[in-house]
Image 1 (cartoon, one colour):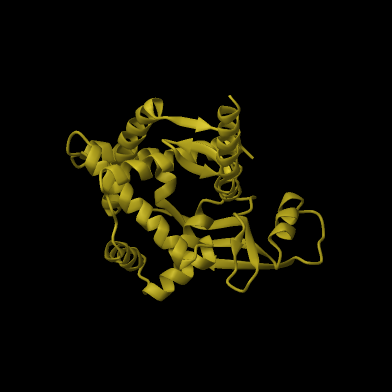
Image 2 (image 1 turned 30 degrees about the vertical axis):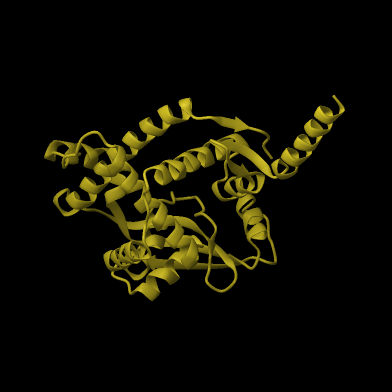
Length: 277
């Protein structure tokens, strides 16, 4: 009896030590408390939502391993070159743009590209039928439902807020009438065609009278744009954006297939939520 009790205590101790940093076990593969905290910070979601996201990613990772799906560095580099070329940028310009506008280092960007390619391969591995190209009617319907995505101004009238501190800038945005010495501002008109496509997309999605997300300014500081007005809105024709629409429709359908697949997989998977931050 004494031996059994001692063994039980020892097993409990050995099990609880590593579990101290573990939030969830998905098929005995851990998701750590640190990973949940980082996801909460990066996505702005609560612990439950962030955990759901990480469980989905873990299931995808395990499924990819089971199906022996891999992504090579050559595939990642080819996709990065394609993205840079699509935006009419050199690779150096593209990497700098992703760093300055989205705060993604080259390593982070490659990780996201790898995740995207792996998702595409996973779809191919689990899809039950080949997806056909969208019909002209589907493209026209998508175009009408997403007209704002194909409309852009010739330029943006903005007030740009600068700060060395992201927290200070966030405080200014939450209380715009408050005067803060650490904040610098500049009123400017930014031509759509003179900025990189990522920043143009962010500004185009920022409503008049609102602030853009806080972005790195490339000088060890941060910036946010207050959108005063958008000048001369231009809507691109359906024919000019058909390839873009076709890709979007196919992407939506692929995501729906993947979501359905992993929703069913999660219901049958051995998932233990131990504790959350």
